[in-house]
Image 1 (cartoon, rainbow, N blue to C red):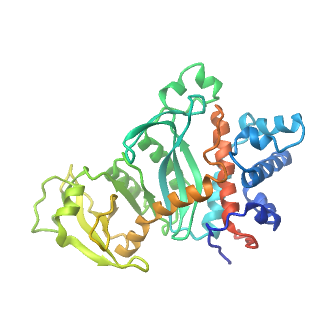
Image 2: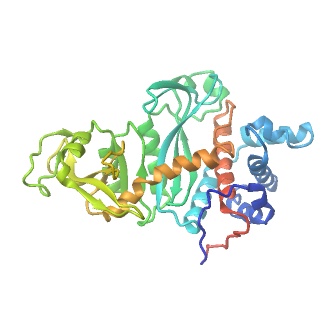
Image 3: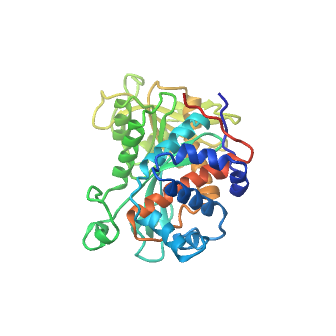
Length: 384
């Protein structure tokens, strides 16, 4: 079975489609669309995301088709047609897992700034890295990532309270089951979807989200049998694991303070081609001194400067070098979101339709895949 690596530098989508790769991907990824017209619309929409210059709004994509009827068909296909986007996302994830050799699932939120209040899900969101409120959409992306590249396969859109009130809810066609959710709840839904997909043992989950209860999330993933690495806030209260560190006290201490003060627990490792120093501290949850043992991990630069991010992972699940390699994957996600996802319109949907947003972003995920596979890399079927 031949497998393929993502090539993030190669984003010539049109040349990829010209090789016939688009036809095979269509057969694999659009098979859940029952009508041939729907499959054709999906192919044309992806082509528009890949080839149109500028913003990939629904209006701009529809304008590439001749005739008012054709443009109306595109609007209907995205905004009001009843096709379900989740089967496409699951087929995309299945295809990527079988052919692109990802190292982990990565869950990471993003805020998409918007100038007005009319786009679906728009609200005020606080961004810790810039220290201010931003008007826009907030969504949690689920990515399949390796040291080479990352591919988005699922998204959860946060809905502020005002979007669940009448008549805005009805105008946006928001389903009855959708509820206003916190960032943590969106991450939890993403975890549930990954677990339901039958996460393989070799593919851990990395969660890089500020404001999530990292201890609780690591515990939840452990009960699901999934290896995990979860970002924690420096103020998170933890206790040293006395079974591993019997000579140390077990009072509650902030995670950030533990990593800066316990210099004896730093060690040299080699995650890849560069030597790295890391704090590796056995801890348990602050609520219990006898809970499951965790490792608190923080990278340090050769100059002795700490990485801003701190991580928790279950103790004894994998080598330190492999865990440190996982801490770098969110940077790959951020890079490829900027380099590829934004180019294929991931941020550009400006409509009010909740189903429309999900359908647009699903097809943008597929466009991201086509953009980075590279011309001439025709994949072979891995089914059967």
